[in-house]
Structure formats: structure tokens, C-alpha cells
Amino acid sequence: MKILTCGKGGCGKSSVTALLAIELEKRGYKVIVVDNDESNFGLHIQLGMELPKDFALHFGGKRMVAEKLLKSMKGEGERFSVFNDGIRASDIPEDYMSKKGGLNLIAIGKIRDFGEGCACPFNALSADFLRMLELSKGEFALVDTDAGVEHFGRGVEAGCDLILMVIDPSQESIRLAEKVNKISEGAGKPLYYVLNKTDDETARFLLDSVDQSKVVSVIPEDKRVFRNCLVGEALDFELKGIMELADFLETKTNRER
Image 1: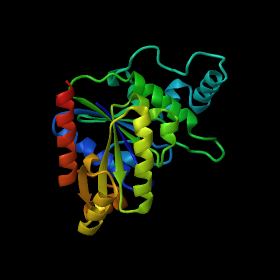
Image 2: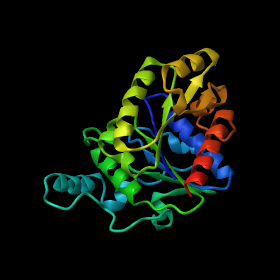
Image 3: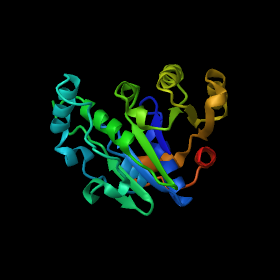
Image 4: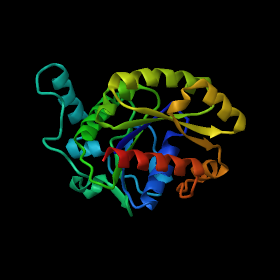
């Protein structure tokens, strides 16, 4: 199952992605984590892994991907694609994938230099990769996205099976949930909510503010997450809300087999 995590900036997308990946790996699954946030350099730390080379470099770098994308948009070539056939994790060269046990990390690309341009080529590459990625039984792909909804506009979600939106206690998250719900319906993708960084009061408020039928996990604020993110240590500990989220995904995967 390919699962995409989205939400506003600071809601905890990367933390939830890392915690979920580690939990699923502990349960015996092979997990492919796709870092699709061009401005976040911390996901690999939360996983306790090395940051691999930008996957875009395997295809000539951001400029080459951008040129191919531009030709496609101008109608000078076929629909944008860098893959001729389906791709599996085992097909990816070692330099472009970090590994630790059953965890595998791919970083699509990062903005590193002043004036280098937008992240459109990275999103196009990510969309193509997810569309062509083939998973075997016992494999999950978790996609950590950039903040907001631009990745929807770039079609990244098209190759995913399910969308998880992380919602923190803020009006911005509540309003964004309404927008993401409409967009995901248009994309034909099931959407579920993860309420994050809550206490009793904020959890009740959020449950009253969003579609409760879509809420699959409530994760209270935890000082261990804050502390490990501050000092740069892996989020290698159990949280009840993450375990419940993993239970939900396991059940959903088994039903769809």
C-alpha cells in the first residue's frame, strides 16, 4: 500500500511518517519512505538513517528533469516519464537509497542553492515514481510531502492508494482539512485524518470541527517527540496513537488483498 502524508507546515507530518515507518518495520514489514519535501532536511534523522543522494541526480539532476518536464508541457514529447517500466525498491541504486533493517529511505530532491528555481521537477519525478512503483506483499510505501497542497496540483497523489492528513490544534489545519477533503474526492483517493499534538481539550475541539468518520488516530502531544527532534535523535519509541494507526493500515491492507 502506498500512503501519502500531508498537512500544514509544523503539524508533524514528518514525525508521524517516521514514527509510523518505524512501527511498521517492527511488525515485520518492509517500508519504503519517500521524502518528497524539498525543504525539510530532518526526516532521515527522525528515522535514524543517513540522508541518501537526491534521487533526481540519478536522472541527470533537477535541470535535466525540468527540461524533460518542460518539453512534455509544450507538447514536444510524450507525457512526462523517466521510467520505461515498473520499478521496485531493489532496482534503485544503493547511493540513492539508505537502508536500516526493513527501512528504506529515498529523497526525491532538496533545494540547496539560492535562485535554483521551484520544486516542480521534484514533484513531477515523485508523481512518476509513485505511479510506477511496484510493491510486493508485506511492503508499505510512506510518502512525506511538503506543506500545503501544491503536491496535489502536481499530481503526486495519483500514484498513491490512501492519503493521511495530519491535523494539529489550529484553525489553519481545520480549514485546510476542508480543502484537502474536496481535492482528495476529486482525485478519487480515500482520505483519513490523524489528530496530532493534542490534549483532552484540543482533541475534543478538533473532533467537533472535522468529519469524525475520517479520524483514524489521535496522538497526544509527547515531550519525547519534541526532545528527540530538538537534539537530533531517532523517534524510536512507541506511541499508542501510532500503534492504532498501524493497526488501521494493517486491517485495511488485509481487506484489500
